[in-house]
Image (cartoon, rainbow, N blue to C red; front, side, top):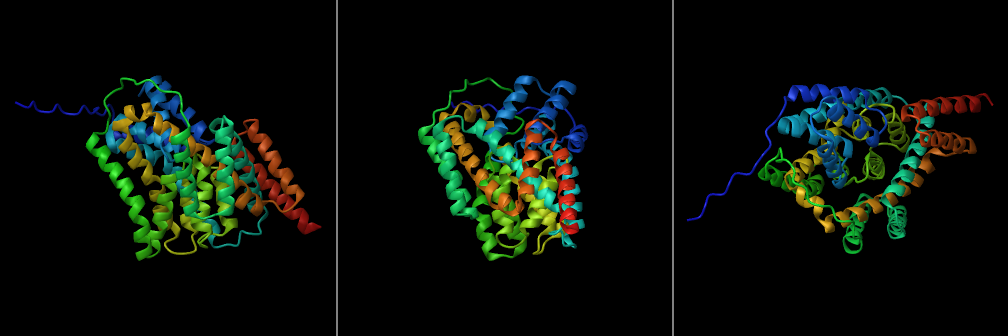
Length: 407
């Protein structure tokens, strides 16, 4: 007689949704410095201070979030919140970490949307700060993600294609091509299998999440063609959140092609908002809230900010919930890890192309601009907090504008 199948072990929540929300809100209000710094904040808060998980479990979740597309620090928060208080704990962790910066950037968007900011000196300074921030991101990512000449070649080819074929489709094709090259040619060092704790998400929920992710990624473009602007806005930001690898800075070329190319947001508005996003705590992906606010085509304002923010983070939820039950298999799959390595190399190329166009071409008008951007880069390399660089660049931009007006 066939024995009944034993139930799948699922970890029981160890804490409450409220305590997760409070802890995440604290981080959302104080975590400056980008994804790498966020991971350090999370370790201090969740491992050292609250003892919600040990060092090994924390490292395992960091690795999972590095493997998946999407903003790594936000996904890490979702994973820790889910592990602590179940699916609603993951939602609470995201809300607490994301809302402060999303609200701040929405307010910034509302304050600037009714005024002509293109000629403001401080806005030009924000654009110069964006040059420094992205240059530093390209350099640090290249050192980590392209350690050999084969992956550097992948990055160079990806950059050339991105510069010559600047559309959302090209970026999808470049990422897919990088994954294929990595799958066929790269052989990462094997990772030993580890006996972990029971997943806080059941395999059934995991499979449903992965199916939902795939269905939305495939069908939203079809729905966009048949419907109006709300679906188009949602689809653009969902696609960006689903395809971004390597940190929030990689959102820049994806979002530029999605909102600047069709004329929803001007290049000046785009780069000014990106500079402002460096000056707020929390995830860089809340840049989407600003873009949804200032979109020239409805829905915009608070409604646009809400749609854009939900859309860009929804893939993170679906992927984290989908991957947690299968992480032991994913982490030991050589093919998966090779594809990821190729994808990351391609991402370096895409971001390098974006550094030139639109960032450099839109921000650099005179030799003094090069000096300000280079000074900002030097400060970032010396580990100066990005908010300091943004403020100094804005002041420099205003002083340059006033000097030009006086002359």
